[in-house]
Image (tube, rainbow over all chains, first blue to last red):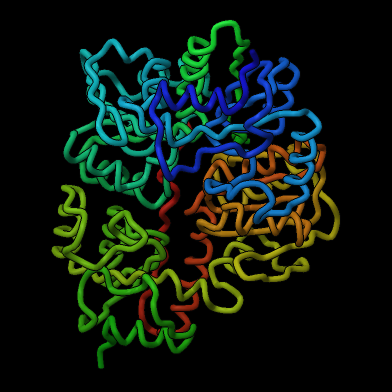
Length: 266
Length: 266
């Protein structure tokens, strides 16, 4: 008996919890389609969809959507750009269903996306405490910021890191806030109440946390920030999810497709 | 007769237009203080305030605020962080008044902040058309993306540029959207309707415009994006404003204080 797209979604909800009122949902294709193979990626980029199709998958499960906005509003609405129309046409010809799976994995306890990043950094073995929107890691001893930067770049395969604040202090307590949780509302309480020396964030408005850590450094308070980029902070969580989906569907081919940040340094 | 902080604000409103319902306002100090000197900067960072005081100014006019949020909510509310308390205490001891001047210079026609960036890029001499939230520049002939990147980095004194999309195409039509106008809502119509080849933006969510231009490039449509950073995109506008303020107050010392992006590449 074949497994449909809707069967996959239902089983994800049983495994990781069902939630109402989310941005999650089928953004392309039909729930009734029989699934031949599953691909998982951070974002449903044009190239990721092509790669998923080349791997034989006809269901792509992604964290960020296909059409360049957080609230995609289903098919047929809003943005009628040429790029979107060409993409929709390609998705249809490839027979690909796309399921946006954003809010659910963030609402597991602990947040599955944060857990994936912690694993990729090999910091699960250190003391770590999950809070609402973040995790706080205590290293066994203080390490220099530049040494931690090298570790992060190497484990996440990043060509560069954007950093603010003190670059010379040693730090032992590190906060991690994935995705768009790098704003002051999440970050400032982490520095002030959880007393993190360093925050690793996905992204956030530049006038909030970067300015806060710049001021802290100017005041002689050694606080630092690494802005990993949205993709770098959440892709490891989707890679973990791909493995868990593989466990849920024995016999079903499940592939992870990488979509590193579209932003390069020139 | 001395000029007060409030006199300066009133004269700015007469010169550039008064508006209701803005985030603009006095965020530190009093409107009744006699002004000895004016400093202008992009953001009221701790170091900018110190530099303004060292220059003899006791009024700092800034685009972004002092306390790490867009809606600062006046003094005494919200964020009671140690960094903010130390900053407030320093501002008070320095006798500095801070006036946030954000919405007004964006609402002049043309947008004064955008005009400053156009001038810094030396593109005022080319054909340029202001739209609501952007300006579209037509170069006399097409130039290669990497050549334009070198020009932009050199004119804005940027150590790096973040870029997405096609890096090899030639482009002639360039959109400029300063500040946090780099999201899809402003950017996608510029590419699709104004047919810009390249957009220079301040900042915006990474899943919107960068993903759009990545898809466009994958579809063989040569579109590109430079993410300048919020400060780099708006500081030249505040530098222009400092000059205009100097013209408005003959005899008053007016200084421009640089606050480049707190984010470095490591």
